[in-house]
Length: 340
Image (tube, rainbow, N blue to C red; front, side, top):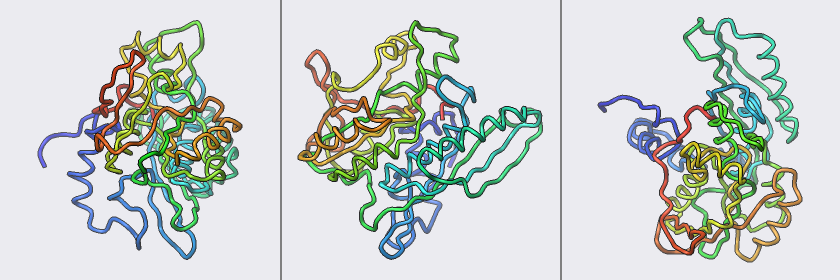
């Protein structure tokens, strides 16, 4: 294959999906274990079925800039990101492992602060940090610190949540405000200050997903990280072969995030969220699930934003605040690189 790797290839949009399908999948021969979720599913994690359970596994890399940002840091981001990938697969997070590559000269006080942040984050869900690796690169060969995390979770066999599990009549729930993380980092980078502080929403959301699962009727879940809400919805629609219709007026977005987005030329529906889940639930259970979610620490601002229909297949339709309808296209990539 000719050409070069672009920054957009790692940004979670359609360009990354195309690269994975055309270059990675076709060069890997064994892509699943037993009948579990594997590479071909391109979901938030993979599974290994064992007896009555499925071990759920997920892995992620983190190169955020800046490493300390309003509302969090790279340590909390790395831990929460992996916990959330397990959670949206319907798995109770048990443990994470981490690999750190640190630049020579990196302050030990900052490293300790990051490790403490990771520990506090996994403690929130009762998980453990059980293994890791540590490397140091010469000064200038890596930008400060890169953290990769792998997670292990457990789900009952046959109850793993997959992006393709949608059914017509399902309702779509967003569990919190959209756009906070990406806009917070973009504002810091541009040196823009607002009357109301914009902070990242980075948080482990197992409490939200667990509350929904206890009610029942949850068919699919996804955390809208790179590519934001737009990419998450489009992936679900594409994999299920169905259509998702969402109401713009019901999507929870802070007014200060809307204002910052306009100033920065960004679409809040396309920027990374790090403490939010998109849940697709049976229509008959939607209100009860919503009520349960709103009682949790990280789900107080949850909202039902739309429903699943048959047509137009594999598309997302946005019903605008002025009464029109338009397709919500998946972004080519994350508009604010190095946010996760």
